[in-house]
Amino acid sequence: MFALRWWMTAGNYPTHVYHALSKRVFYSSNPLLANTIVDHPKISFSRTLDFFPLLAGRLGTIKNDDNSSSFFVDCNNAGAHFVHAIADNVTVSDILSPVHVPRFVHSFFPLNGHLNHEGISKPLLAIQVTELVDDFFMGCTMNHAVVDQSCFSQFFNSWFEMAGCSNKISRSPVVNRWFPSNVD
Image 1 (cartoon, rainbow, N blue to C red):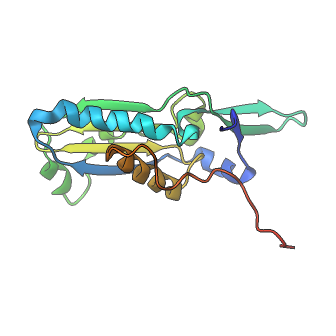
Image 2: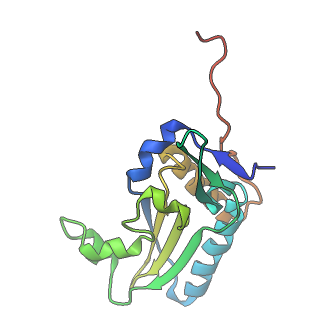
């Protein structure tokens, strides 16, 4: 079982002032199956979080006796967010054709503009599935104080495994800290 609190190291602290990590995925489907296309990722998302309890928690902080602060992830199952939105006047071409990313694309990412330290009151992971005219856009935002790009990719890969009707993931997340032995 996972500890109720996962203490962060000093190496995690500088990332508190950064913006969260973001990824995006386009996927197609029969428009008649739109509800299924949104519900299935939502269910598999929830099941995947069982393997990544840190991402369903919140950041916490305590004041130490020496007046310094320590940060931790409170694995309290406060929840990650899953949002379903509709952009009924936007096509994939509207997003991919321009030389520069259109300004409206930022609205397809939940927690856009939030800094990592806001994970104390905001989710550490949020997904938004946006129905476009001709496709679906999935925007994912994760708190960079808690995960790095490797963990982000592992979560995505695990989520896709679970969406493929698997009951388990092929590679468990590594959350234990370790240091090589016999090193001076």
